[in-house]
Image (cartoon, rainbow over the protein chains, first blue to last red):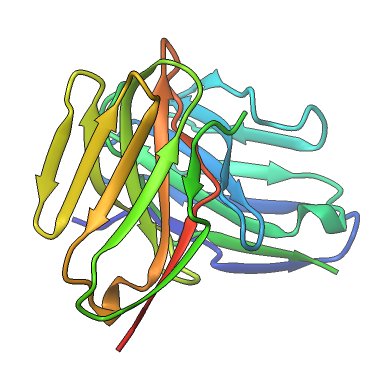
Length: 114
Length: 111
């Protein structure tokens, strides 16, 4: 049973370009969470999605960031017009139920903006 | 906003010693979880303690929860070099679905 798969693992973009990060949850999991981690810091919640629905996007910047989790295919975190401050590790996690359970994390996608 | 705060922020011990990490939080919780992160890797779930539980064990791990003090502690007994990692507490609050993480604590176990 494959774990949470994230790709790409490393992504380099120039300022102004778009970054697309993909996350395939564990089999049977229908809940996906995205977190951002800056070096030497904890994880900051960005967004929580279920299939075709955004449940909580309270941690998402108002501009340039969007997330989706379509009926078919992986969840996508999209960052438009990237800036240097977007450089970070972006982690996806999934869970089989909506409350109180543990999250299963992917290995992260490390975005570097030049 | 981030709630959990681990203490100390960094700890260096010798193999075989015990390591204790503390976590404080500010609001009422549904449960509190501890995760480990090896350098450059994703987080791995260690243990979950519910708000109506006071203590829980898993192998060399012991977690306590004191809701009156809004604090939790993680004890790793007989530490090994492989325990070297960052450790995070995380909580779910009230009606929220999301898991809120603290800033983490870096544990170094010297062989």
